[in-house]
Length: 467
Ligand SMILES: Cc1cc2nc3c(=O)[nH]c(=O)nc-3n(C[C@H](O)[C@H](O)[C@H](O)COP(=O)(O)OP(=O)(O)OC[C@H]3O[C@@H](n4cnc5c(N)ncnc54)[C@H](O)[C@@H]3O)c2cc1C
Image (tube, rainbow, N blue to C red; front, side, top):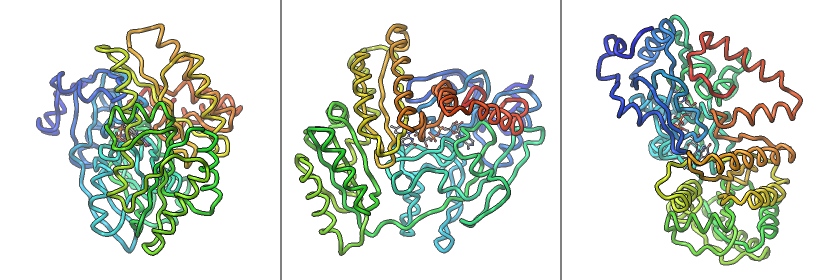
């Protein structure tokens, strides 16, 4: 067995931290999940990563690749003793090509910072998780992230063209997979296999991403409905109008109230929240604004707040971006001084089944007597019911875990999925099995285990995650 101290010899002491107090900071995530590791290593190049992987292979050391640990599924938290591989120092934007509509980046670049750079070229990277200011490229690729613009732009799997990866083998083999062009048939699609693989197959050291022009103008409307049925009718009319909004976000009344309390958002919460963002050309702004306001009012919306342009819109986004903090805020209020876990569901259902899903989840949550926050990226049918509970309260924990399976069952019964964008990690492994069983496809899990063995024969890369 090699030691983390030995890593200091060949990487340099400045790239390895073994102080347990610091290491602990890299072994936890915002959901409250926490673990232990023996060191944090900060590679500065693909070559560093390759040497670390080869050393770990030889000495049977587990490796946990890590961006900002914001995935909320336990995927970046160590599951056994091993080393955390932090990409904090591989955070350069290597090159932007407007003609090719691509950007080359290192994995530690945060999506928010990437967009600051791209905005200088009039472009953006459109995947926009609520955590955009901390989420890294490597973490977002590996968790298959989506976000607020999912209805229009999908998820990471639609935006990654090529990758440099390192395999957890004897040599720490460095490979380039994928292309620099949108059209690319390179045998089996290894790039797509990497996206959403949660750091269990290979380590990403560079990515070529697609980029898209910034919209010329954007109209955002925020409004509230007393009845969920009215909100859904407005949502449906938008969907049927041949306009493809950039943003379509929802929060139920109780959650919007909590989010306002947690964030101090400057809007009066008057019911269930719907937030819509539509891009258009400058000449059409007034027309789109009037269309959205009139449509909402026709479906009994309360006041409609509108904003033109991204900066003004951020004011309206505050409430929605506070979905997760709202549950943390509420948990701390309800269980003062206790260490909490926030369990955030991440289901998706076909949009035509959304109203049914929301009503059924609200009914199940009431039945279990749990204070559940409910919101999500409804444009693509993605909902995030969430609940906070004290780690050491076995009775509440049992109740939450039963609720967790009930919510998953609802998603599956409505033709949906148990994990839309945050990944499986440790928290949703049972639900993944449930989903494949419901599809009559448990054999697919064996295929996945086979793929894992091919990439990672010793099982040293992020073990205990996904399958
Ligand atoms: C407040 C809040 C809001 C959020 N909103 C959204 C949202 O709207 N949409 C959404 O999809 N997610 C959301 N998330 C979840 C999360 O932020 C995203 O999934 C994000 O993309 C994860 O990035 P990260 O850098 O934190 O990755 P991490 O959590 O550090 O890692 C995620 C996975 O990637 C692996 N990994 C990291 N880097 C590499 C690498 N270089 N090579 C191989 N594997 C690697 C890790 O091992 C882990 O399995 C939210 C989280 C929070 C806290």
